[in-house]
Image 1 (spheres, rainbow, N blue to C red):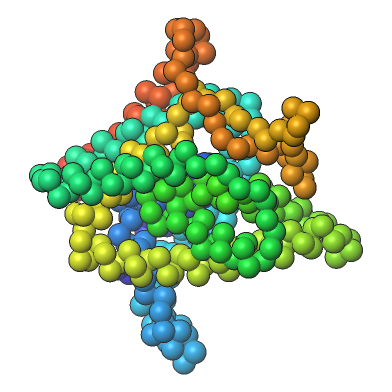
Image 2 (image 1 turned 90 degrees about the vertical axis):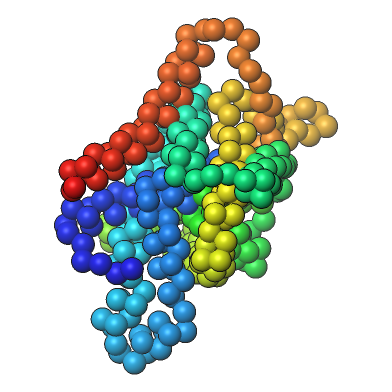
Length: 340
């Protein structure tokens, strides 16, 4: 899989990593979907699959160049760099946009997923009863997950490690949102907001020569949680890639059919018109978690009752979302024609 990459190729890989990182932050959207639509999903999975005992033996023997070639480390490293950049930049912008322009953001993502379904299915080939059955199973699983109720926050390190393994599924399984899974597990705010912000604040303080965070027990707790979560994510990423690499080789079309189903099922998660359901006590007051964050237990989804300006704007963003993804397809077609 390892190839010589130009400076432009490297830039685009970093940009794809940034997009994957941003997608992983949004409940209902998956980084794996970005990889699928952008055309590097299989290379991503097979590269992760190369992180095995042979790779570690090469590293231990000091054969660094052989290790880089064998694992396609240049490709993975550039994607990882993009994801890291995303978590400290684009993800924060997304947090702001979701707070200020929630309906428009969900509408754009809804449209992008619709466009992705078209993009992926156009090259699937003929459908038979077997593949339609796999598709339906994927749809049912995606819808079922979207209607589960979230658990309460739990910072037990063993559970956090398991959250890392499960939450990274969005990187490897298009249509299965890792961030939404973390919401269901009750740890989305802890792992993707509070811990990441703690790391950002700590790095900023270190750059300024301020090491007072060492006396901040809450900060140290969050950093410890982030380290354990990262270790769990790395473990899950490598182990899931081996499983997916196997099924892609043996049952490629069946796997793609299930993935398409997952993506279609995830439309329920990003449905634009919804109201948050908050956990309340006996007095009707909204319950807060340890970080004074309102606890969401689900969503009430509805169809807009009137064609207001807000509804028209949401529909416009859905269309823009569809065209954003389709433009990738048009770009690839243009590139193919240009290259002969």
